[in-house]
Image (cartoon, rainbow, N blue to C red; front, side, top):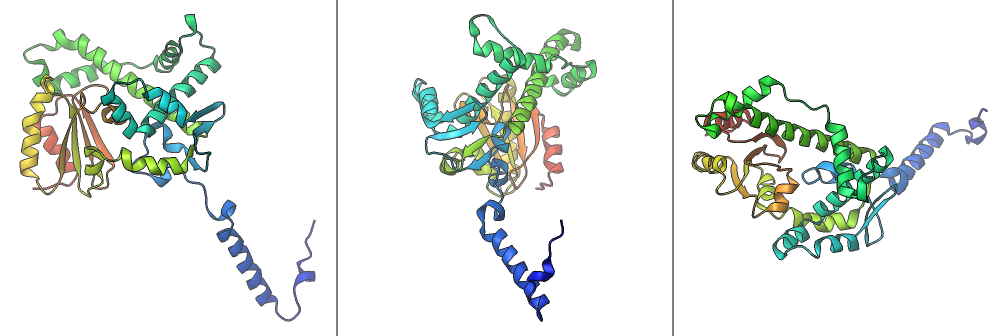
Length: 316
């Protein structure tokens, strides 16, 4: 069907008419919210803050108590209050400063449970945790550790094993690496679910929570404009204690060039969980824009640390 534009063009000023129409169209797209401003995701709006499952969630105007929703899943502020109310005071205080993380964990739990049910997974007694575990095992069952990875780990962590031969520790190393790789595979699967879930999150609430969640040594360092190395560890952990002289040397060598931060995971359990710490020690390197560029698990010797720092362009 043809539209008769000629019938609407005033005689004698066709160019002016089209200019007026163009201005009207631009005015409509600029000042009409539905068309002029695309909805933002957590990652779009808060790239230095959004990680993991919630990074693809759409910021939305939701009722005050409703924090997150998607098909079949809704989480309210009252739900989070019930989750943290019975925790010991120290952990409860950390959770109150990281309610977005608490929300993320509850959203993951509920959506994994829904996926388990959709997959047909049932467990005796209706144990939700067992159903989720079975689902994650199903999606990580093909993970394997080749021999060369075991040997490479042994060669790069000889300080940790002392005088033990490769044959003496190969089984333990393989189990450790298998667990770590399965955890990473499970995390990737969970992230993929978040991307597909079509999550909507309460925009106003997120804005109010961001300031609290970023008030910690790691995020302050990441936002300082300088590169950062963070060591997640604990006192009494042998490889963690072995890292302390290296951290001290870095602080002396690069006092103005980079941040060197130590996080005791026993004291900052929620912060460690937010950064996906499953075992210790872990060294995480961020560039001057706060973006993670490298991560290492286990003892990281001075030569290897120096190589990583050089690769980030940091000079004495």
